[in-house]
Amino acid sequence: MEDVVQKLIDEGILKSTRIINAFKRIKREDFLPEDMKDQAQADMPLPISYGQTNSQPLTVAFMLELLQVKRGDKVLDIGSGSGWQTALLADLAGVEGKVVAMERIPELKRFGETNTKKYDFKNIEFICGDGTRGCKNEAPYDKIIVAAAAEIGIPDIFLQQLKVGGRLVIPVGKYEQSMVVVDKLTKNDYQEKKYPGFQFVPLIPKKWGE
Image 1 (spheres, one colour):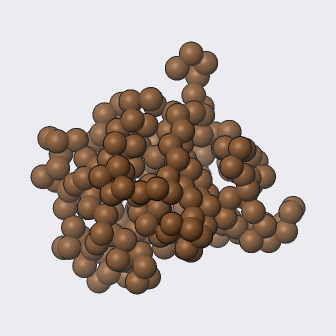
Image 2 (cartoon, rainbow, N blue to C red; image 1 turned 45 degrees about the vertical axis):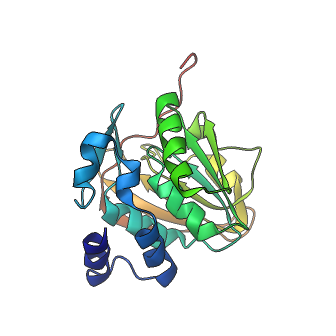
């Protein structure tokens, strides 16, 4: 990943020392199917089955730079997939923090959980469930990150489960998607900033019986 990390630094996507170091420690190839590991250096999304992908490094870096996880943060990771972003979040949150990783597809939940165990993290809890509902048992969160697009707007439940002073990063839109950063200023006041030009799979609920 050294070449990819350096490219993202040169392009001004990766800026924070802690995030750069996390990218160097957490190897993307450890979160890919065997037949895709040789493509870990590609700055593009890679398939991991069930219509899902291991996200493009540029996108993951951009989202983590926006999220700015601090040591000790409690983070909700919606759509954990391969577990790569989850592991990066766990590294950034440190042993004092916690990452709650939600994935609606049982096989991918197990895949991501198995992958993160390669790094012996003790601060990750994997949950197979409907990410559109968040995870109220662990709420409120310092940070929430969503790896699927909310096509009709940000679900209120994410805002409710965010701490005052917390931050949400989520792609929003159906045909033209933007990355949206939401800072919760008070219980009912929020500040948003949008970054256009992204493409994610849709955020969909887990159907009954899945």
